Each structure stands twice: as C-alpha cells, then as structure tokens.
Image 1 (spheres, rainbow, N blue to C red):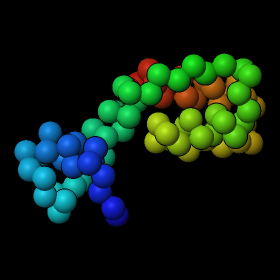
Image 2 (spheres, one colour):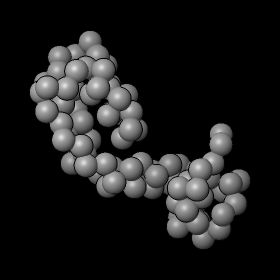
Image 3 (cartoon, rainbow, N blue to C red):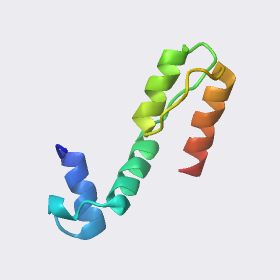
Image 4 (tube, helix red, strand yellow):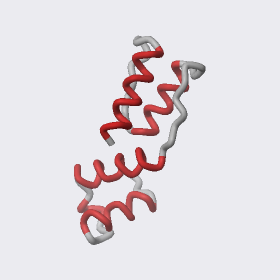
Length: 83
C-alpha cells in the first residue's frame, strides 16, 4: 500500500506517530470519516448510475449498480448520515 500525506496525517492523529507499520482498522476508520466530512456531494436524480458509483467509491463504499438509482442515492445518503 502506498501512503499519501493525508494517510500519514491520520496516522499521526490516531497513533501519535508517522510510523506506517502502525496502520490498522482505527486509522482506516478515521480516514473514511475524514473523507465523508470533506465530501459535500449534491446527490440528485440527474446523476447516472456510473456517477453515483464513483461518488460512493470516493466515500469508501461499493454500490451495486443492479439496484435502481433511488436505492443507490438512498444508500449514499444513509452512509453520509452515519458518518
């Protein structure tokens, strides 16, 4: 895994050190939470399923495009609310 500056900052915040060997689930959770807080998506019905899937990936969730658009939007919105 290649570590970005953002990941190193999260690691330092969670563990107090920038040692990549300390990366664990707590760091992963903190990174996802930081991504959710910085992602202010305007989800609307004009987006395609592909666009919704891309936005979901930016948040760290995988969407199933076999569902209809309303279900995909609902899934993203529920994930953002849980934060």
